[in-house]
Length: 299
Image (tube, rainbow, N blue to C red; front, top):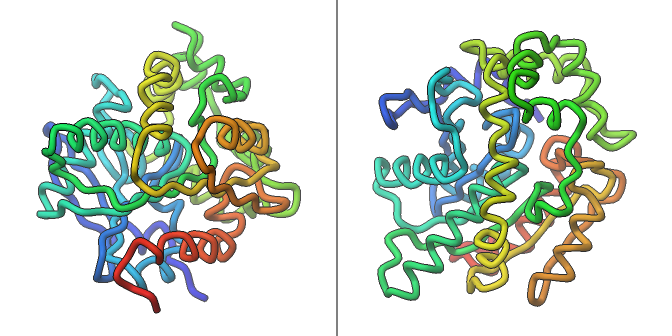
């Protein structure tokens, strides 16, 4: 199966404006709307191996959040999970969409949790301006107490040191650290690593990592809001987890099973932090088995 290169991905994408920033999004297919929310430090291109399956069953939309991918990466900007959730709502309003399914990963899990928290609140008031029909989470820091930050993530959070790390971090360092969160037999090859790094470096995005990393503090600050959003919601949930992930792997899935009522968890053997690229078919099969129950499509 031929996959879209980053260049093809960008060429086929579209833009809209949010807070004077150009926001890139990829969209294809037709039918019920699925929004794919990427993680840190990567982009919507993370979904490229699943794209053919996704667009065959949904109108799928995958934006690059502010500061990521092919979107603008302003130096002076108050980056936060709440703002990224606002951006997603603005994009859907721009497209005239008010009913969605969500598929999220990593940083995107926190954005999805905030969207679920808002949906829960509006549902109680009888005013849900955005209906969420389902949410599937991939590896991410759903529970801050279980998130095992990598050394570079810890350094990026420190004043001055974080800025310095952002300025000096090299492609070789990125490739080594990035590969370490994948499964032993599902690591990205040299070409894929090059693509990930090139996308991160657009508009010198690699130089603002110390600003984007604030999401870890956001998670701690809003832990109860975002965890309770999943505990209390009526939205159908599934977690698809790569258990070999040292950051949010088996230990995070076990915590999910402890806290979430009637937990629906799938573990993909041998897979690490990026299930959608390490085992795209496995993620798709388990995602479709889950989501088709909540769609009008059964093919």
